[in-house]
Structures are given as C-alpha cells and as structure tokens.
Length: 249
Ligand code: PEP
Image (cartoon, rainbow, N blue to C red; front, side):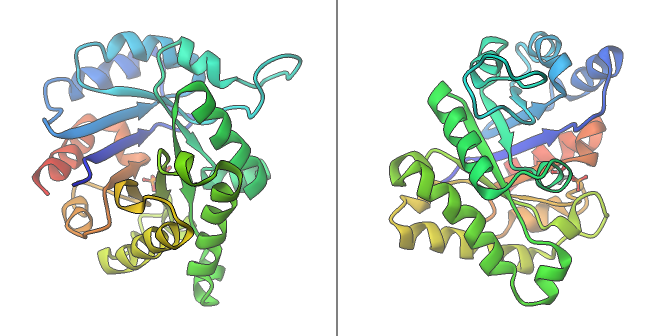
C-alpha cells in the first residue's frame, strides 16, 4: 500500500510573515499516515525549515541545478538544498518546461542530480490541451517519463515520485475528472512496469486545480497517490482539508 503524499507548491508566492501565518495555520492539522510537504521559494527555505519543526511537514524546493556547483550564476545545487534541510525537490514543473525551456533531457539530469544528493525528486509530467485534443496525451506523458528512465535506470527510477499535471489544469480551475486522471496515472504506472521499474511502489500524484472540494474524489482512484497543490496550498484551511482527504482515502 502506497502512503499518500500531499505537496504544496507555493510557486513565487510568500513572504516571511505570510509563511509564518500559513505554517501556523497548518500546524496541528497534519493527519497521521500522510506525508505532507511544502515547497517555498528558495529565499525562504531556511525560514520554513524552522517553521515546520514539529509540525509533521517536510520541506522541498521548486527546482535545482543539474550541476554540483561552481560558476553558474543564479543556480542552486542539490547539495545546497540538502544543506538547508530539504528532503524533496520538484523537477520539470510545466512552468519550468514552458517558461524556461527545460526539455526532457535536462529534466532527467536534474532528477539524477537530486537522487545523487539524497533528495527525493518529484518529477512533473503532463500534456498541453492541444496534445490532449490531438489524442496524444498518453504518448507525450509516456515520453516524458521514459526520458527519465533512460537516464536513471530502473532501480533509481523506483525512488522517484511522479506528479501527473495536465498543463491545461494548472492554475485554471479546470481539474481533470478523477476518471481522466486515473487513466493517465494507470498509463504511467503501466509504462514503468513494462520498462522494468518496480512500479507498484512508485507514488504518482495528481496536480492541477486540486482543492478541498475535489480532492477526495481524486484520492479515491486506485492509482492516485496524493496531490501536488499550487493555489490551494497557500490557504491553510484548504491545504489542511486536502491533507485530511488524503488521510481519509
Ligand atoms: C502546480 O503548481 O503544480 C499546480 C498544480 O497548481 P494549481 O493547483 O494552482 O493548479
């Protein structure tokens, strides 16, 4: 049985006082039996590490460099994330792929760098609306996952968390139906299994306009192992309710 995981992606939001209020609101309502993680912007990682102490909330970053260190202005190495208390890192979020031109190869290198340093990468994959309307959703997402399997190999891939995030559902208020999401999650798991990865142990999160209102129906699906939550993770009550729905599923 896979333990549910709920990850809050704060994106480029927050500030020291807002972060403190948000974690304060979540403290005490993190349920047993669910992994809960927040991913603040880089400048707040150390602050949030202190804030989450004793709250049952883990710390993740939103991106990392594939390189170990050196003359790479503006980049942040996996070892630095580990050094400030991160255990998790998002990789290949659609906003990174679209706005920063990250391709499957670079994403795979970042996933490898995270694992090498001892972080758990959360590999984000997902199709655009054009790709879905063109009947290519499964092929696109399978290729995104396969590119990482090729670089990592089968054993390392089993340590990765996958987040299926249809691009058309991110920040739009338009969620995939539980059935649409389940089809994609089952496809990802089957692709991993066929490749030879120990797929039954891989957690596959759904992301895309998850809220307290739709979380329970998504979590009821057999291959949905939690959620990557953007907007709704910025409001303590909503985020706590999503975590509670994960615990109840
Ligand atoms: C995300 O940023 O990964 C995300 C899913 O955002 P939202 O929940 O706001 O759609």
